[in-house]
Image (cartoon, rainbow, N blue to C red; front, top):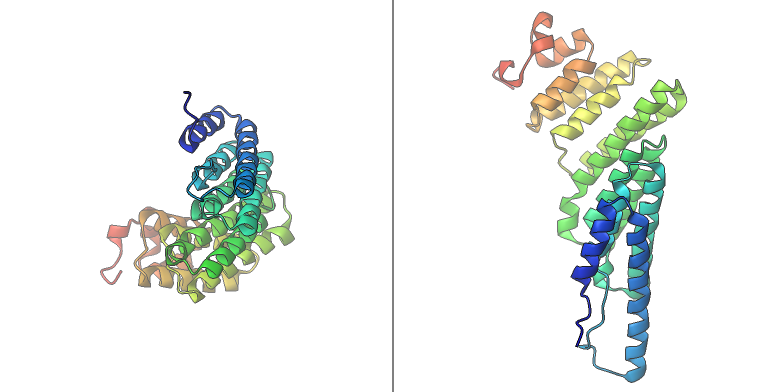
Length: 277
């Protein structure tokens, strides 16, 4: 007798379609599998069979595979399609309470990446919405593992703010650029208040947001110094974060924060900093 394909087989097919830039085919197969799964469940109930009877069911890997395919598009259309897949995943989990389709950290992260890669001007708003939905999902489940992933999720959201601010700045839409900068700063503050631990890239993104505050020199200086102090205190000064700080901080601010002569700042490396660092 012919063997029925397993979900592993279906996931492999969906992955190949994603790699071949045909994520819509993968999404169509995923919907087909879900419909088949629901129908099989209904038939099982009518026959009153034991729950041990095998029923083919899409799992988190299935959804993440389709999401990754759309994320590779690096387009607004791809990000919208990925968002629709994640919404289906959320709705199906909410309605059926099937643990196999519970949205994972990876699902939200891939969808965030899709929006960031799309270069959509409002990507920061979309990514913050995803962050809040992710937080809602872990609050309801009290999942400690997912809570440990919060800092990385915040980092994605802050990165989206950096990119959106850069876009609005290039288009000279100062109001929108300012909104993106303030959103990123608010998210960073929120992360610290939640007891999360930012990493060196989070601090680098914060320095980039500070760099977009040219019209508010006083607050820019204060925030740069405060953020660098926090970076030093937490031990996250790296070549990346230091290089970003050097690039965006005014010379006097950099000298005050790093406690080195101005002429050494352009080529300064982590190992060149004073011992107290």
